Length: 432
Ligand code: COA
Image (cartoon, rainbow, N blue to C red; front, side, top):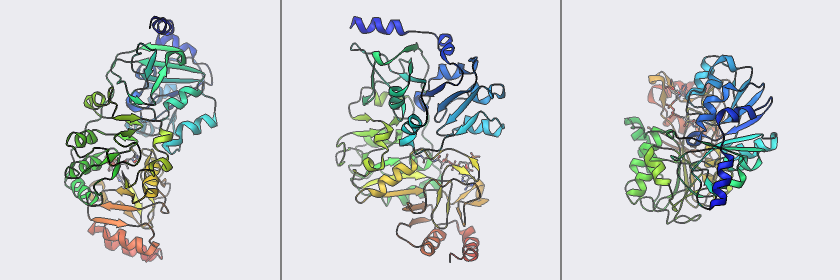
């Protein structure tokens, strides 16, 4: 309709004018990962203001505002989840980045409760004739923040898919539009090695036909999906939609028909893959994007019977504490939706919360099953929540088990080179 087109035109602006809006002390929240506002984040270091607080999640690019020391006094990147560029900043000793501890389903609402949001800067698909845009492939926190922010700025990108679910935003809710034209970030499926395949085999044995699954990112989940090809009627309720799920859908393994919540639909809060993924979700009524506070709410997840969450970790101690986000005090990634999805699966009728990891790291120098977590480690899944731990050597079902039983079961699935050491340490600790 002409009216909406005129309104849209009035809201068009330039990046230079956007930067002038950001004053001292501003709180700015940016869209995440596939929907990262790349033009804004590439230029924001040029603002001439002090104490600008930017909130981001899993940055895809090495943006100057947190990687160049010169901007340290003016801008802080408050990150809900670290990716490689964020770890690089830490390595360089740059202090303009800090982690915000969170369960992903509460990231947006916790922030809204903690401070006023001045700006939301996101990415949207082009406007339709009724004046609607969509927040495209991510509404983890984006829509809640958009509704709470004083000023809404959207980068409108023709490459951004038009998605179904709760993603629509009307032009009347938007203050400024930047028209952009860049490729969306891509993550390629990982080729699993022999160890990943053995872990995947052990997991696959735990997943019954008709289960609803959540998969995390990386080589283990990709290997797992390959082994699901003979399963029947799997469903998806996941934080992140992955490309391996499209493979399983095309093979007829994922039908979503057995789901007890949102029967027939994929449910996710963001999608991340290659171009194929963005084409798959584009105008696809079989894929529902809902807010992270809904999709990742453990009580919602638990409404899916036979819900299985599959996540990976860096270390597990002999009592069952899982660390997936730090190496000692060095922050590595984030909690993300790991605890959300794990808890939801554990609460689901006949559900399973699976934590999978390789038994060794650093070329075999260290065991990932450890007597105690190193000082400064973050506990991502506490031992009172842990359910299944899987390595290439087997499965330890820890839920309901004593510390002594857990230690024995975990030592059995540890790498053989470290089993004697683990026994000795467990005895010293008084666990065995
Ligand atoms: N001690 C020290 N270093 C270790 C280690 C250990 N126990 N285990 C792994 N590492 C090192 C690896 O050598 C590797 O180092 P590099 O970066 O120098 O190569 C690095 O840590 C990452 O290990 P890797 O096994 O390649 O990790 P990954 O890419 O498969 O990611 C997690 C694994 C756990 C970090 C990741 O899944 C994560 O962040 N999870 C938390 C969030 C989550 O699960 N969300 C789920 C919903 S999407």
